[in-house]
Length: 120
Image (cartoon, rainbow, N blue to C red; front, side):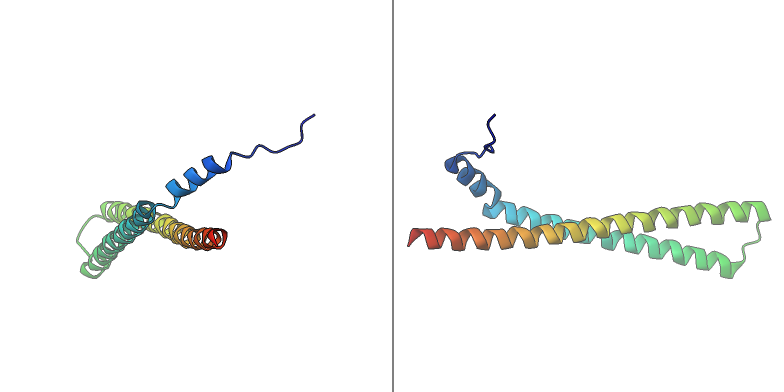
């Protein structure tokens, strides 16, 4: 029974690392973070607009039948709730990507310093 773990050749591993840590990969991660932050800002603005709409309707006490008013409020409340859930998910993705970028940069530094040590 062979108990050795499969390890790719060092040449294959080096090629994979070069591809994984290319300058374009870091730029793509940074662009992804920028896009995600922009999307979060847009969703926060949309959520604020819905909250303002809610407050306006409460203050105006629109002369609608009770059932219709309740339906409009419940529909608005559903939209607000869905947006809040989207924001929580987006913020989670943002934290995950920020951590991924930190890890990426840390590994890149480690590999660079290790390669510098090997070349001496």
